[in-house]
Length: 323
Image (cartoon, rainbow, N blue to C red):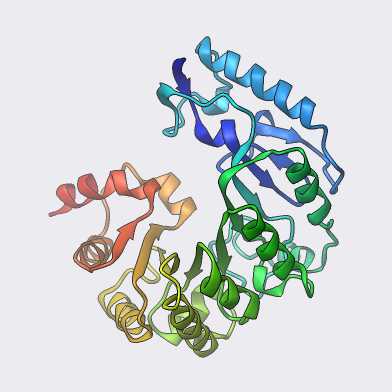
């Protein structure tokens, strides 16, 4: 049947430190499957029933308030078979970076960062095995491994996740700062459908340390080079370097040119460009500065470079208004 719905809410699972949600784009309680979650095995039949109720609401154009204006809503023939096509593993919060734009730490607030780096969390393996036993992963299920810093997971956990996902015939996307090198990530790049995404957000050491608020610039590029080398052994592997533009900080000609030069030196074949989340929410419909215009125009002209989906629709109007 053709109806308006959302793939995220229909077939995704986000495994957070304290809850399980349907959608990683929403912090709304309406999109949570379980609150106060601590690693327990879930009632799959309960999930399937709640999913049916959501589908019925969609068919009746009775969307939850948080979904009504979401750009991911789409009218088409939907597969109503229960199961996940995308799983985000983000139950751990320890991270070697202290990014000034971090949503989870409120922009890197010291007390929040300390809590995130020391908090106890649950073991995700029993839940994933349980869902596998219940045939809840659809063919080719995509797993996003983040957190936190996945290269700093407890010993053996990342290897288990890699082996588990590949045993399903699934694909993996690692979200890592790149400061800590991981043999498990390197091995995944060599043997299966794998993407590694690293946010560098700078071309020079000074701006990198201003944005990330940690040292590690030189380590990062050395590790990135190793990952790119590993990816060349596998046609199904890709290393993407990300540049999150923070207006007034890293949106200048010197910075982006140095960044592009370093990417080229490592042999990186993909660059993703985004704009800082909070700035974007407040300014997406306003004129942009000359520096931001030049930065976006520069990236627009680079090979193997693309804009994140949340800003791609704004690029043309931003530039046309300011030329």
